[in-house]
Image (cartoon, rainbow, N blue to C red; front, side, top):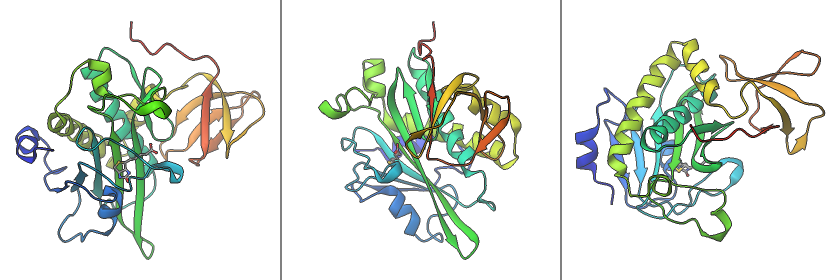
Length: 268
Ligand code: BTN
C-alpha cells in the first residue's frame, strides 16, 4: 500500500502533489481526475491509485499494472492555455527518464509521443487528456503509469515492458520515487509556462531518432522516403526535413518515428 506519510515527508515541491487523493482501487485515475470537483482538488493535485480496474492507455488500449507494485496516477493542472500541452507531456516523460537514469546504469529515452524506454523496453507511459468548459480549458490531466516494482509482465508483454526493479535488481520505494519525480515535473512546468526554449532542447536530446534519418508512419501507413528528424518545436509539432531538405511539420499523435539505425541504449 502506498504510504502517504512517507510520501509527504519526502515531497519537496512548492505546489505539485501537495494535495493527494489516494484510492486503494479505482477505475482509472484519469477518469477520476476528469470529474473530481476543482474546489476540492485543484491545480497540482494528484489522484493516485494502487490498483485500477479500467486503466487506460493511448489509442484506446488498456493499461495493466500489478496492484500495489507500480505508480499509476494523474496530475490535475489548470493552465491558462491549452496549446502545446504535448510539450508538457513530453516534459513529464523527460522527468521520468531522468528518474530512471539516476537510479540505473542505463540510458533512458523518450519515444514520441508518450513512452519512456530503457533497453528498448517500455517502463512508463503517459496519457494526457483535457476537459473544456465551452472554449476554455477547465483542466488538463496528465496520466502517468510507471512500472516500478513489477517483477514480471507475462508472456505477452515480457519482451516489451520493463520495470525499475528489473533494471536495478531490487525493489524501489514508490513514495520516494514519486516525490522525486514531482519535484522534477514542477521545474519543467515552470519552464513550460515560460516557453523556455531550453526545455524543448532537453526534450529533443532524449527523443528516440533525434537528429537521425528516420522513416515515418502516419495512421499505420509508411510515408515514402526517409526524413531527418529534427525533434519537436516550441508548439510540440514534430519537425522533419525530407530528402529535398524541405521542412515538414506534423501536429499529430498518430505519427510513429522509426530510426533507420538503432543506437545502443547503454551509456558506456
Ligand atoms: C500509454 O502508454 O498508452 C499511456 C498509459 C497511461 C497509463 C496511466 S496509469 C494512470 C492514468 N490512469 C489511466 O487510466 N491511465 C493513465
